Image (cartoon, rainbow, N blue to C red):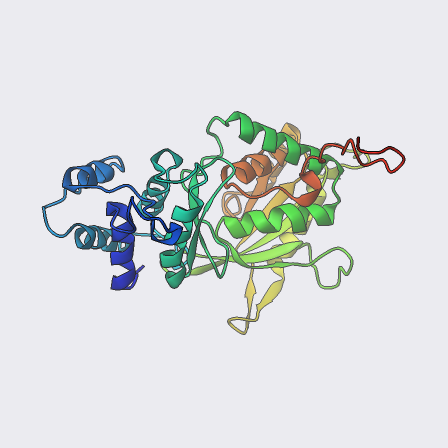
Length: 341
């Protein structure tokens, strides 16, 4: 990834605090980033766990050189900057480093986005008060330490519970359109196409097909079969549940039929199949599927259950579906037959 030199130097000005004045009467001319001398510039980069040390040269140009090296590090596509650059942005916009403004740092954020916008990116604060980057065109957000098995904060646990309640009452179409499509877009899949359930023509066991581009630019195609309820291996399946044998047959059907990719103008076969359940996949169902798949197919059919969906959704900082948001508190003055005072 490469930024224009003038934009790198403009970012360098923000890092070293060259923009604005502390004694400015006009808000547009005020300083919202703290001034950093040579020692504090080195300290800033040491806090990022890097070994960069300022050599005494022009401060903002030296920072621009460092940013250019950071952007040259390996990354996942042109819409996702390297992790080190994302961590630098988050540290630069730390709410504890606010200067001459409130904790929301709205003016500092506006100055940063003025520069990032020229390169097609935007900085924003997430619900966890950390600053993230996203690509303006695709809304892709680089994932920082997106470990779904890490401990969750209290706020993340509350979001997880809200999403779990939503999965209890949502339809299968809502599961696909409101939860799975945003989730897989955020995870880096693209050309995501949902077959839908209103018209099942030519679905062939696929609810979704999508593709993923490897760092080598090779493309893998994925099909996804989604079920709202529990997947079991019972001989007599209860209402609301689905039998793993049936889902397995649908996954095999998915892999045997071609899909048309309009971007490459050719038909392709699905390389891998996801089986996704909005409920639990029972232990017996997992064991049955493991026995049904021989060694050559174990990597072609993968499965995710409710816990996987909830954990991935939380760590990727996706906004909750509209139906999962808590209801606003009632307005005590909403009754028309009583005066407000």
